[in-house]
Image (cartoon, rainbow, N blue to C red; front, side, top):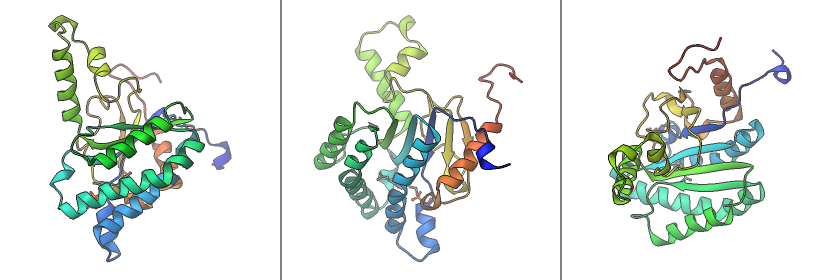
Length: 238
Ligand code: FPP
């Protein structure tokens, strides 16, 4: 089919698990951090592709609560990369109408990085062309534990605890659940990403390593998503 005639179903919210940086680097005889650098450099193009497709929310899994278990050099290297990314990209993204949000815990991050994240979130808070959530020091189980703590501290009675109340106490409060989650590199796991929110997400697992994930592969994933019949536990609409 001519691509101009193609009708794709465009998800409102796409989550991306950016996997395969290490293997990408290894395949070219480079250190792992070079893979992460290439991964960060890929973010801007994927955001631009998301805007072009008309997606309203993109959530990127950049650093999980479990990633602290990696060697110190790699952990601090990823922190430096996020810091450089914010320095370099916040103003251009702002000018493109991107709202940047952070999900995860800011404690444990160095104060200068926390300041940068807060600056990026604050500068872009009124933009609505697309919302980019950066999951950094994020874990789905940890997010649910935090929500339960907040609810208990608020003094809610057991019968007041509903799915909606839990949703309002997650980091993602006010953001629609992801329709589609893409995990690159061929690994087929959810790895604690948006556990609560992904209950009815469609998942796809392209074999492409994250640094090579581009508009073309993204479009192929949207084609796959368009073929899916989402039933949300009900019966087919077809
Ligand atoms: C997965 O590759 C990637 C990570 C665990 C996080 C790395 C972070 C980024 C690409 C981008 C971070 C974004 C910002 C804005 C800092 P892997 O190391 O698990 O690869 P492997 O499975 O091939 O070893």
